[in-house]
Image: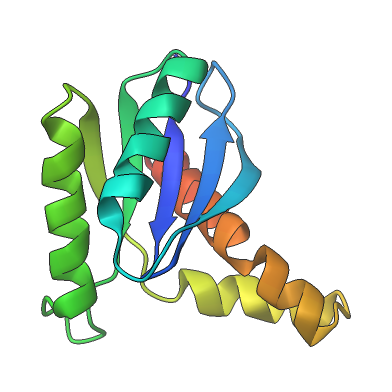
Length: 136
């Protein structure tokens, strides 16, 4: 069964998918929504879960560097609860530094700032999902 990886922001949702053997994560897309309109993001994830025939989601969990839970992590917890109401299994995965790691990789690949901005969320979702897959 495939697994969906998500990097949730206040206006974007980076999306990645695993292969059916849960070995490799690949970027899919970035879903854009109005500020804090998490219902539309939830509806899009439900559509993807049906399309990819999966009920497992790995959601980035942006804890603070001192391991405390901040506002963004609380929003991830709320989004997790929203998805679980639809019988999806949601795993929160520590995403600290995932966006920085992706940005560093894109800079070293000499991508322009504009291209980095267009790609960072779905690549962060890929790093989050791959970290989860590697831990299994």
